[in-house]
Image (cartoon, rainbow, N blue to C red; front, top):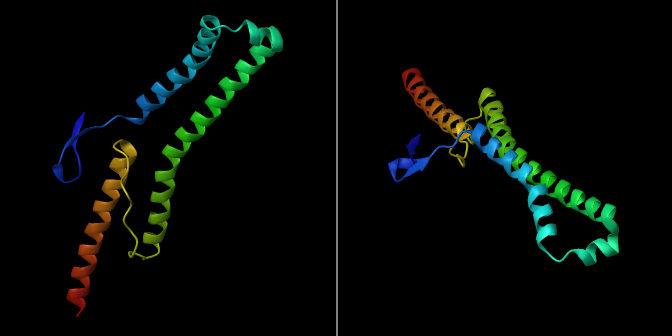
Amino acid sequence: MAKSGAGGRSPTLQIPIFYKLFASMLFVAVIPVILLGIMAAGDTEGIVEILGLQGTVFVLTLATLGIVVMWSLFLASSITRPITQLSEVARNVSMGDLREANVDVTSNDEIGDLAASFNRMINSYRVLDALAREDNE
């Protein structure tokens, strides 16, 4: 689904988190195949001679695990960081602190939509609060 960016400047493609995770899992599943393909296509007889077949498989496994762990940490932090930030801002707003109540919208997925909706809600609350203060004066 195409959506317009901030202020309607340029259209951006909204990719749901499910599809990002699906593509990531496919990427992770292909890593061992790529590494084995590199081993099969290249001149790896020297490596196998030095490390032995079991050692070579062990090194490939460690390399694959390293890549998978780094990618998983990156993916997990890219999903949880905006949610944690939104939670912190919501906690501050619930205590009546509206000074730093805006959430930076950095993604164009469901989390970005949630952050943009939260910012609109806070702006509406500020307007209602200002109107209530005018009525009390």
